[in-house]
Length: 238
Image (cartoon, rainbow, N blue to C red; front, side, top):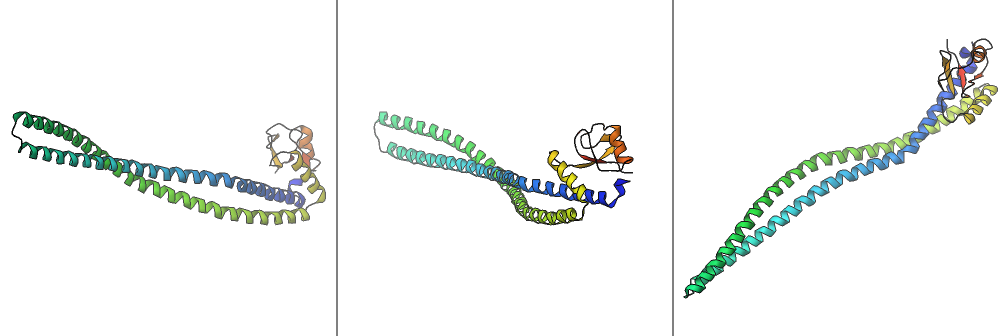
């Protein structure tokens, strides 16, 4: 049976090496895209940390602003109370009293906002701590992945060189007529596999039923046979 012949086994070996080389080359071509995706993920993680840092700084600045406002109002209240001790007219005293009351109301309002801001600042600080832990670990993991991709690129390049040598050796050791037919099929069929088994009278390359003549050619004539549907080399393994 043709499937068991050394010439056909050599063809299957060549086809296997060819497919591995094609797959390896595709992975190598895809690496820049994968690398870019990882870099984008790193930037997103870093931006998340930066956003948490910015939010915390904003609340810190706002809290400091309220602290300065309250300190300024306290100074004014103290100054107005000192003036009260020196005035003699009731109208002036009352005017200062009204001003002190207005300042006190403003300070109370500012203290309320300061307290709310301080609570938000605490929440933002807690969020930042979580972000720095979680997202920093994620950045480290992604950077490690990036390094592994760089290493993978070197491995793929070496694999392609080795497979090219093996393919050349296989081609030199093959039956010339088989090699010519195989190379012709590779030009006709857009993508691998180029050599496929027939199962239940269907070509496993295109999943279409082959004719009885094809089956006869494989089993009876025992010659290299092409699928009459997709153009791939077909065989029956028994």
